[in-house]
Each structure stands twice: as structure tokens, then as C-alpha cells.
Length: 418
Ligand SMILES: *[C@@H]1O[C@H](CO)[C@@H](O)[C@H](O)[C@H]1NC(C)=O
Ligand SMILES: *[C@@H]1O[C@H](CO)[C@@H](O)[C@H](O)[C@H]1NC(C)=O
Ligand SMILES: *[C@@H]1O[C@H](CO)[C@@H](O)[C@H](O)[C@H]1NC(C)=O
Ligand SMILES: *[C@@H]1O[C@H](CO)[C@@H](O)[C@H](O)[C@H]1NC(C)=O
Image (cartoon, rainbow, N blue to C red; front, side):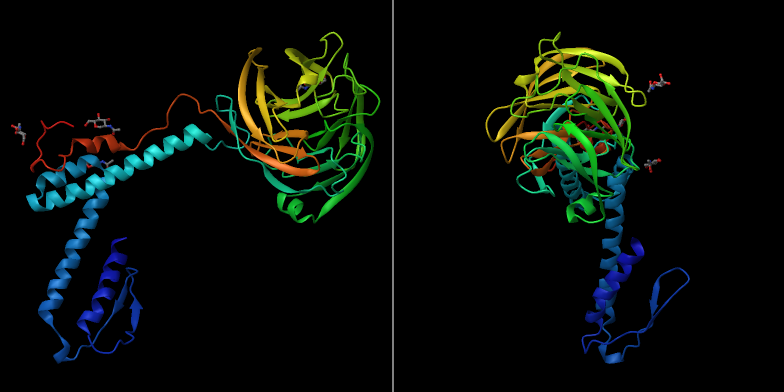
């Protein structure tokens, strides 16, 4: 940094030394990486005294710059520098240190605010957080490719926490909001936004908008049955179809406002899940984790919430989050069920919506976003999570606080305290 500063100061000084017409000065680059120029000055233009003064001012400025710089970097070095400096210099330095200190505090405060209100930026697929905290405003991406009359459907990205996959999919249902048949695949978000480089497919029939994509397979409810269907997206082939034991189907316990979504698939950091209801559960929501290769139910959890009272649900880090409508413009995430502890709790996280009904709701562990199909529009939301209790290491700002405060003198000694 220093050579550049020196060069800059020299350039700034040149017009003073050469008050005549500006001129180009040829230069060359030396082995030290510095730019060397030779300037030929006519005698009557030289004001040597002034030049000397300016050069010494420049040197002072540079020294001060160096000192200021090391102050921020090393508190104990500052102490030594300050103790060695003369009183005038100390006063000036102290003021600047005060400014730096307050900037540092301000910066830390903002950082704390930011992490308290919006959560720390989480690495893709990370569950190092204390649960859902907040949902952003909706970001409307576009109308679905089949048009406004296809009000029901789902979209999202591959929900396996695998950073290599950037696959996006869009699956609008038929106009009667029941059948899943067509879907499109995009290799990237940019392609999706520009609606280019897509593959358009047709795949048998499914019921409702509970589809999800996990590790390059799409899972959906085979129409008119309690069957889970698994489709290989590379070849668009149905590779597995198996009934989900005891699951009700044919619009028996569907979410409020969202028909035919008897089997609601969800992918998260912990695996593939299916959310549904049974006669034994009296319509309360049941959560099962699936073995993706066999579609066997690995484990099942029973919640205390009636599925038709919810508008939808999703999983994140093994926690079920359930939504209910508050109005035509707002939803509430009102309930959470943690499958790792088996514990449930009530919460209230509001979620604005552009139109009335949220159909497909899919979470992506990669970017911690919710992909929502909102009455034909593709919308997404950023999720923020609570930070864990341990705090990030702090800058040594507190250690500058032993510096004397403004009205007080002068020579600090070891006994002075904050
Ligand atoms: C800070 O400065 C002190 C005194 O010059 C030196 O002993 C110490 O190693 C420095 N620490 C760092 C982290 O640079
Ligand atoms: C899924 O089931 C198969 C066959 O029973 C088993 O080999 C595999 O380990 C299971 N996968 C997981 C993730 O448990
Ligand atoms: C502040 O200084 C004290 C001793 O002067 C030291 O023990 C402490 O670790 C320092 N704190 C930080 C955050 O550097
Ligand atoms: C340190 O400075 C304070 C105030 O300048 C003075 O009262 C005190 O006696 C000094 N202590 C030592 C150990 O020099």
C-alpha cells in the first residue's frame, strides 16, 4: 500500500512544482515494481523550499497512515506507539482512534443486528441453526409455462442437499387442479427465468401438487391410489410404484383450499419424507421418512394437528413446519414438529402471499428457500434460521478501550483503566 501512496502523493505534488502547462512525463517500471520517472525542471520554476516542505508533509502523512493502520491491527502496538509519541501527536491520534473505535462498534452492532434479525448466512445443506426464525417477502419469478388457468401445481429444485445439482422443475396441474401429467426441467435458475434450454415431459398421471424432486427422481401420488410413484428424471421412466400403508387418498383429508394433495412429498437435509393422514390418525398429519431406493417407510411420527386445518407443510432439517391461512394475503407457520426429538411446539411466523392459495410448497436445503406455486405463479421465499448460542470471535475492539478518553490528558500509563 505504501508505494502506491507515495506515488499518489508525488503525482499530487507535481502540479505545484510545475505550475506551467501540464506535461506528460515518460516513466519506466523498475525491478522493485515502482514507477520511476525523471523530470527535468527549468531553474526558474523550481521552488525548492516549497518542494522540501511538501515532501516532509507527505512523509508525515505516510507515517501517520502506517501508525493508524497498525493501530487497528494490533492494540498493544498502539499502546507502545502512543506512549512514545509526543503530546500533540497523541491527541490527534487519540481522536482518530476514537473514530475508528466507534466505527468498529457500529460495525459490530450492525453485524449482531443482522444475525439476530435475518440469521447468519448458512452454508448449503447446513443444519447448524436453532430452527426457523423468519420468512422473507415473496419473490415472484414468473407465471407458470402453461398459463394462468393452471392455478394448481408445484415447482422447485432438486431438494437433495447436493451442491452439484442445480436442477429446477415446474409441474403445473391440469386446469381442474387435480392431475399431474406434464413437467419441465431446467438445468439452471437462469434457464428457468428465461424459459430456455428446458426439457418438457409427460408422465402418466398423478393426483395433486404434492410432488417433489430428490436426487434426480420425482416422487408423486399415483392418481386414484395410495401409491407412491418414483420417476427417473434422466429417462422419464417410472422406476418404482408402491402403496403407502394406511394412507388415505382421493381427496380424503386434503389441506384447506388445496385439493387432491393426499400425499405430500418433502425433501430436506435429512432425507425424503411423505406427509399424509390416515383413518387411525383421525385425519391428523402423519410424517414418514422413506427409504428412497425401496420406498419403504423407515419411521413414522404422529402429529397433533388436523391435516384439513392446515394449508400446507414442509420439512427442514428433520423438522416439520405447518402452515395455515390467516387471510387472503397472509399465511402463518403455526406449528413445528421435530422428528429428531419427537417434540412439537407452536410458533407464529408470518408469510405474505400475492394470491390466495399456496399449492406446492417445496424447500431446498441448498439455498434455504421455499419454492411455492401461488395460484399459477412461481414464487420463492428466503428462510432465516435462529443462530446457535455460541458467538463468533470478536475483533479486539474492546482492548482499545484503555485509551484515554477525549478531555483527559496525555501520557497513558499502565494503571489507567477503561
Ligand atoms: C503486536 O505488537 C507487539 C509489540 O510490537 C508484538 O510483540 C506482537 O507480536 C504484535 N502482535 C501481532 C498479532 O502482530
Ligand atoms: C434402503 O433399503 C435398502 C434395502 O433394504 C438398504 O440396503 C438401504 O441401506 C436402505 N437405505 C437407507 C438409507 O437406509
Ligand atoms: C485484551 O487484552 C487482555 C490483556 O491486555 C487480554 O488478556 C485479552 O485476551 C485481550 N482481548 C482480546 C479480545 O484480544
Ligand atoms: C497514571 O496517570 C494518572 C493520571 O494521569 C496518575 O494519576 C497516576 O498517578 C499515574 N500512575 C502511575 C503509576 O504513573
